[in-house]
Picture 1: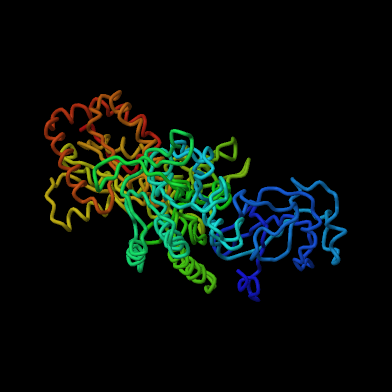
Picture 2: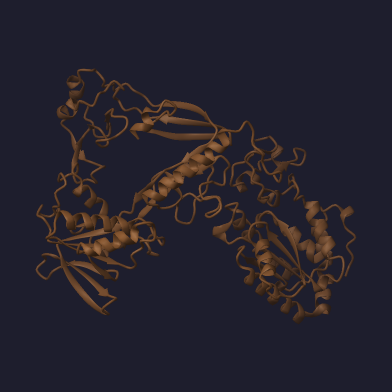
Amino acid sequence: MVDAARHPRIELMAYSEVRKVEGYVGNFHVTIEQKPRYVRDSCNACRDCLEACPIKVPSEFDLGMAYRTAIYQPFAQAVPTTFLIDLDNCIRCFNCIAACDLQAIDFAQQPIDAEVDVGAIILSTGFDVFDPSPLSEYGYGRYADVISAMELERILDPGGPTQGSLLRPSDFQRPKRISFIQCAGSRDENYNPYCSGYCCMASLKTAVHIREKYPGVEVFIFYIDMRTPFKGYEEFFRRARQTGVIFIQGKPAEVATGSQGKGLFVYVEDRNQGRPMALETDLVVLATGAVPSGGTDGLSSIMSVSLDQNGFYREYHPKLRPVDSPTEGIFFAGASCGSKDIAYSVTQGSAAAARAARILMQESLVIEPIVARADVTLCRNVEEKCGICVLRCPFGAIIAQPGEAASVNPATCMGCGTCVAECPTGAITQAHFHDFQIYAQIRSYLNERPQEKILAFMCWWCSYPGADNAGVNHLQYPASSRGIRVMCAGRIKRDFVFEAFRRGAGMVLVSGCHPQDCHYLTGQHYAEKRMSAVPKRLKRMGISPERFRVEWISAAEGRKYARVISEMDEVLRQLGRSRIKEENQRAFQELEERLAHVPDILFTAKNR
């Protein structure tokens, strides 16, 4: 951090917060609020003001185990070294002003909005440590000697509340036996279902440190699985065992005091020995995992990037583009999109910097031509408030000011087409995936013997490659299906389905990515929501609901695609050509009325 602050081409804006981001890749305009420190940059961190300040409050950096004054430095190596004043706890005694020979104290400072133009943005928001207070079975907050792994880190730090001496909080005596409980709040469906990744190695590091510095202290680690997959990790695991750390496989059910209310007992079933045990211990350490850092949700709205099911930022693709956000020009580093250890974070930071440099080194960027376009003559927002397209776009590519037609920024649009399918007036279209083109494909595929065919709408990234996967692997399935490829399932209109049945289709399949795999973040969600009403409408028209099916198929699920088509073909044969034709004839008039807005010049639909 010191090197970054001294670099001539890096401007470090500490104690600041991003308030607004406008623009697009290569042309971002960012508004940053610089919060007042009430201490000028002339401060040389002499600490005279600290000695003069009468207020003592719990230190956030030491997790409440030590105290700081109302004027303070967040931690010893903070950059910049300038102190700041906590006005929420300051009593305005002004002793600090009198103690400061440099006259660096300035209570008149106000927040300043700085506006900068940047070409690329890297989000590196880090993570917070899970608060184990809800884990009542372990007694955190109830027993003084049940602490978190981060609290133990501060205790062992030479600059911490005990100056590095291993002392338990209850009586400040050295514990003789320490028990680590892994996965405290991680890999738990009640709290965080994911593995935080770094906790096993952090506990091993701390355990080895304790055993080497205090050989007489026994260290036990209770674990579900020890996850040590990266370079040198397994060797370190072996070293921990060699130093005398004892590993017990099993997740403790409870931590409780003894019968006299003294001492702590860890109750667990030892899976290796197949028996329950109660281990008396002096100090219990909860290896808490990672959760998204505070403010992640708010910054998500500002940056127009979405969150995954765990609250971290969602990358464009976890394997192919792991540092890219779905918004072009915004990248991720470190633990912003998931918990990571140091080596992984450094690697991703370098990758994000390289991706950002790719943009900054070019005079212009080439974008995909499949962007959405708005027809100002058809946009309903001119006469009445609409803005549906704005709400449906996960990339913030559409603007619809009151009384004005919607406009699409092609540099930001990723071409999912969800806005096209949701527009009530047809004012939004998508280049190369125009409604006319899709209707023409429907007409072509169903021109002959439509009752014998399954018309499948498939997304570009997952379900269509899934069909390819079935072919590449020579999986057998009926030849009755015909596929229409769109960029995203969110592009599939209900009218496409109804048009297929108007043209006499035997069955219709709507398919796309699994919810967590959608390349356009929310496209699958809106597709699923849109298609959920189709079976009821078909039934009302007289068409069997089983002739319509929605499936989410990944690019690797060729076998699933083959199974789905086989099952649909079986239903097709059971219903029979005569019944399908009869149902289509019954629904034809209603379908004609519903699709009256589709230009007649495209069709020669007949009552089949």
